[in-house]
Structures are given as C-alpha cells and as structure tokens.
Amino acid sequence: MFKKPQQYMDPESDDFQHFLYNTKPPEKKQAQQLEKTEKKKVIKLKKKIDVKLNQDEDRIATQKEQVVQMQVEKPKKPTVDKLALNPVDLINQSKKYQFGNYHKYYIFRDGAKWDDPRIKVLNSEIFKNARVLDIGCNEGSITLQIALRYDVKMIRGIDVDYTLINKAVDNMVQFEKKLHRRQKDLPKLGLTEQQKLEKQMEERIKRLPSCFIKQIQQKLKITDDEILNQVQEPNPNFPNNIYFRVENFIGFNKFDEIYDVILCFSVTKWIHLNFGDQGIHRLFKRISQIISTGGYFVLEAQPWKSYKKKKCLTSEFKKTYAQIELKPEDFHVCLATYGLQLIQSILPDTIDAIQKTKSTFKRTIQIYQRI
Picture 1 (cartoon, rainbow, N blue to C red):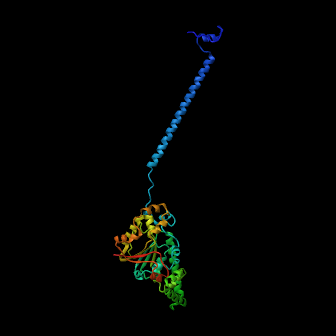
Picture 2: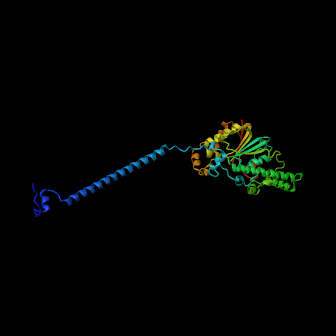
Picture 3: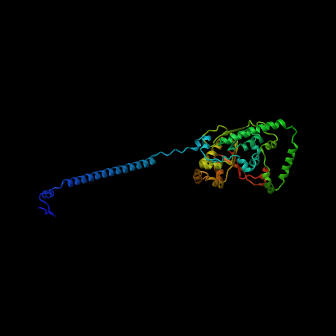
C-alpha cells in the first residue's frame, strides 16, 4: 500500500522519487552503512576484549593452581639431625649459649674459678690412679683442678664448644708455665710464713658457725696463682696427665676409651632441652658402656624448675620442654636400668659440706657405681 507523504513533495524532485520507489538517498544510506560498520567494529572489539579478559582470567587461575600445587608438592626441607653434626657446625648453627656453653661460667656461679666446692666434697680416693672423663668441661676449671690436686692416671675434658676447649688448653699451658716457675724459684724449705698464716686462718674459719662461713665465703676467692700454693705436692705427671677434646658426647662418634670415674656437672638440662628424653637416654647408655665395672659416675643434674627459665631461649626448646616425660628427679631410676646404682647423695648447705668447701654449692651431687 502506498504511504501518504507527510508533507507536500514536488513530483519532479529526487525526494519524491525516493519516496515513490521506497528508496533512500545516498547520504542517508552511506550514513547508515557507516553506523553499521562502526557498530560491527565496536562489537568485534568488545568480543576481542572479552576473549582477552577470559584468557587472562584463565591464565591467572592456572597460575594460582600451579602455585598451590607447587606448595603442596614442594618437598619439605629435610631437618638436619643435630646428633649427626660435627661439634663445630653444631655450635655455629645454634643460638648463642644454646648448649649452656657460657664463658667464665664458674666465676659467675661460685665466685671463684679455681676453688670449686663440688670437688672438695668428693672422696679423693675415687680419683687415685683413675682414668677420669669430665663431660662438659667448659674452660677446664674442674678438669685442671683434679689433674693438679689428685693422683689421677689421666683425665680428659670434653666439650661441644671448640672456643671453650681452646680456652681450656690455654689455661693448661698457663698453669704449666707457672708451675715450672714455682718449682724453679721456691726454696725447698717446707711451708713459708705466708702459707703458715693461711693455714692457721683456715683452721680458725673451720671453728666458726656455718652462718659466719656463709657471710665470708665471697671473700675466700682463689686465683690461678694461689691454687698452686694450695697444692703442696702437685701431681708430678701434670700436664702429661690431662687432655682436652672437642666432642659431642651423645653424637654418633665412637668411644674406645674406658674410664674409672666420669663427671657430669650442670650438663643434663642442656642435653635434655636440645635432644629431649632421647638425649638423656643416649647420655646414660653411653656412660654405662665406657665406664669400668666398679667405676663411679658423679652427677650434678639441674632441677626441673630451672628448665622453665630456659625453655623460651628457642622455639625448639619450647616444643621439647612440652614433650619431656623423664624428669631429673627420676634419673636414678633410669640409670639403674643401665647398671648404674646410686650409692650416695651429697646435699648442699650441710654443715659437713660447708666446712669442707668454705662455701655452699647449689645442687645435690649424686654418686653412682657401675655394677
């Protein structure tokens, strides 16, 4: 049906012709084609953008999956067994003082480096012609005192910290020089006047009540020079009777030596916190393997309450502390299973101990015998 034009058109005009044949003018046709082309371009561009966005999302999702998979499948870094490490690496890879390897420990603990009260309460007969091992010897204070004071066949000090062993060897060399100088210079006339006065003073102090002894104990410090004056007849084999070695006693190394006396002062807590109950069992088992029948094991174990003060030193200590089942008060039961029988407990702060040491020591000393 013919559409009526909305306005008058000249029959001769192009507009009338377009209207008559239902065609569009070239300008409008071009404009519409251009609009369609632009729309197609926009649609095409939009599709490209959508495709790219989808590809990016897929790529990001794939990368996330790969990362998650890598995290799941990534092999855990193998934990190094501290028992397998050599002592030098063990110390270098550990936190400072993680093994109780304090420098100048005995000065801070007892106030006197060369007058350890724990030695004086022990029966000197157990050291006679004995082969002695000092576990955790630190700077060699106790080791040197025993080598000088008692008639030991030999004594070996071992410690996991090589810097402490170096210091112990240096102390031994200094003692050797001073001993040689004293033997060369002092006349062979018995006690000097100064030594007589010191001996008289000691006798007077012994007669004082224990409370007075406690008050003056800090004044009775002995230097490395004075210890030689105390030893009237030093062991003639010194320093050929003393040896030091860097050693982790509970490591995988083998011990071929057999000892008659084994000392373990203030060591068990550090073995316990570093290696757990397994470390304590390894310690006691190894001692039972290298001690002679009838030999003596002298133990000064830190009490359980002292563990709490050090458990926060490392995160490893916290975990180990929570897993410990074998408490120090039960060590004697464990040692009995390894053939070491408790024969004596020396308690601190007793009158006899104070008179022997002129001071008090802080922990109970237990003496075991290999049966």
